[in-house]
Image 1 (cartoon, rainbow, N blue to C red):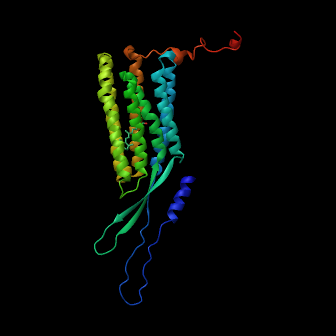
Image 2 (image 1 turned 90 degrees about the horizontal axis):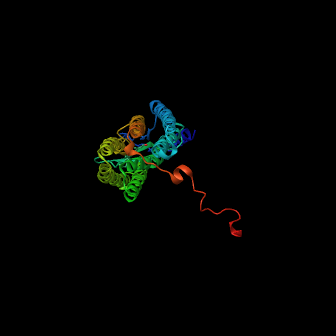
Image 3 (image 1 turned 45 degrees about the vertical axis):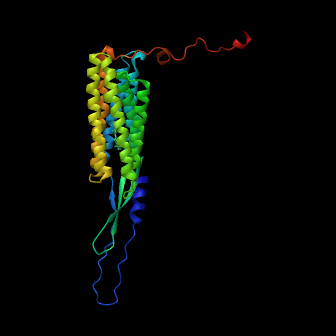
Length: 306
Ligand code: RET
């Protein structure tokens, strides 16, 4: 409903360029009012959002089922991976129901010889819930890979922060104006942050994983290479879709849908199934993770009297 309202408001807000009323027989200047262009999701895009929402829910249920087969002390990868698909489900639900969507208004200038410049208004839908979702899912993917490699806390923290900057920069870029450094400036900041993430995973992560043994090393290299290849397609899609507006909103939704399924569902299944077969990847977490805060050493009622 909100989307319909916005569309109605946007549709009535264009400025008509007045045509002149000639007093003599001079030729009438043909100044045709330039109608704004609306780029928004159609039937195929909306259907794709619902389909991916259902896929993410089924994946979450599957990952929860898989986690129940192992003791709590060995569930860290399962919990993180399930949270990824749960966050993705929430983000797709928001987008499919019309929440988390807004319009970016861009005024495109056209220069002509002998006549003043003209402007063309473009309103393109931005699914900002997507970026909110990514800012939660992508750090969790990095944590999964960092734990697998045995990455140090310092490197993991930097990779996570760079990743959050990357997704936020992508969102600012999607709402940025053209003709100023705003839009492509944010995009460049996002790309630099992405290189920081790749550096930590591919260089530091790989070295750490190799030190954990050849089996873990090989698996880490394979799953991280897959991740980096899939992730690198995102900024390319962004550049063509939100950036250059050469891709329809429907194609954009479908492209990200395929990428999200690869980056989350295929990634998650591969990680959890391999982890279950490879004891070297185990993280045995006792203590607080499995048992909660120990009762010993805590204050009990009546202690003051002692
Ligand atoms: C943006 C634009 C700014 C530059 C870069 C980008 C990269 C996005 C990536 C997204 C990955 C998303 C995943 C989601 C899973 O739920 C923000 C498009 C580099 C890599 C894996």
